[in-house]
Amino acid sequence: MRDILVTLLIFGSIPFILKRPHIGVLVWSWIGYMNPHRLTFGFAYNFPFAALIGIVTVISMVVSKDTRLFPKHPATIILIIFIIWMGITCTQAMYPDVAWDSYKRVIKIQMMIFITMMLLQSRERIQQLIWVIVGSIGFYGIKGGIFTIATKGQFMVLGPSDGFFTGNTEIGLIILMTLPLMYYLHQTTENRWIQHGLVLGMLLMAIAAIGTHSRGALVAALAVSGFFWMKSNTKILTGTAGIILLTTLYYFMPPAWHEKMMTTIHYQQDASAMGRINAWKAGLNVAKDRFFGGGFDFWTPDSFLIYAPNPKDFHDAHSIYFEVLGEHGYIGLGLFMLYGVIAFITASNIIRRTQKIDYFAWANLLARMIQVALIAYATGGAFLGLAYADIGYQLVAVLILLQYLVKQGVPEQEQNADNENFSAEEPKSFIKKPMSVKPASTSFVKRDPSRHAR
Image (cartoon, rainbow, N blue to C red; front, top):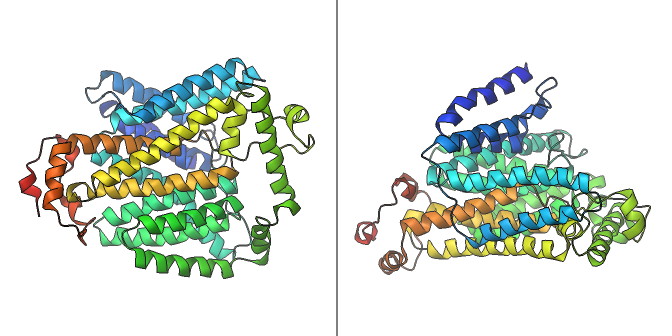
């Protein structure tokens, strides 16, 4: 029954995608994040739904007048160079056949990232994408939170089978990246029932993140908590709630959880931690020995015999940084890091430019929450290999779109005029009020500053 339902839903979306290609991005994102076909037990489990939707979306783009060029941005240039460099490293890979197969998967993901920037150039569509991400990952986060409470934290929360987020550490990180996006929806949604539901969802997802028993997720949770508090609009409320929640969870979790978390400090005595360090050193040694790195998925027992300090302790990368370093060398790591830095700077620029403009309060908050998500990725990613997962790249694409919309809607001289008419004190209705304003992306008509002056 599940197979039939999932198949009908996905195939039923095709006519809508052919009419409006941006729906293809939303459906593809839903499949990628929620993996609904992995919740089935029959023919739908291994059906290539994502590839099918990708093909239909491209066909629709070709014939649609809605298709535009993706916005020019330094991050897109760096990403293109990084993609090309990954292709070059495949030619010098230790295991070329395996590397090229992985490169094809990465190319498919990156193609949809650029399609995202080409088709979602409006406020409504960005909002729809955030709902898809939150709903898809929130399904596992909320379910995981209920599971953690029901089992009193005795068992690990895991992600969907055969996906990027299957393991406990991976799903823990993805949940933490999604939490700030859920907060954004809570702040920009006017329906009270949806707001209450999102609050409950955030609580359960926070419980699920701790319930993954992931030390990497714990480190990311601490980083996210501090940065989220800095970026939130309600610092007293979020700070108090965060302290109460973390304290409650700390005493709720069983002794086994506390023992595992303590190994973060005494990592020398933990075999798993030492295995990760062994893998990191292997990636470092490969980068030192091979200018182009070892290529995609070089992490094998044979390669560890050559490059790992402990050849018998085989692990995969367990770090986005050492994953890219080992597979694509120092140049690859430099491009990867530069891409992240530019993304973070872009978010800061959006925040600064829209700080006193009520009309773009939604963009200001979304940029701040994506910054929090990127902090989660940067910290939690140090302990797991998700360097090519689509969520990080898609959130950067959203930042690029936000900057594009802000530039189109508020030229520099008009922004300066607006700033002179705003008081220094930020209005209390900073988020709720502007959601009733029609989206700036509808026509990009130049606004008369006097109409919006307070």
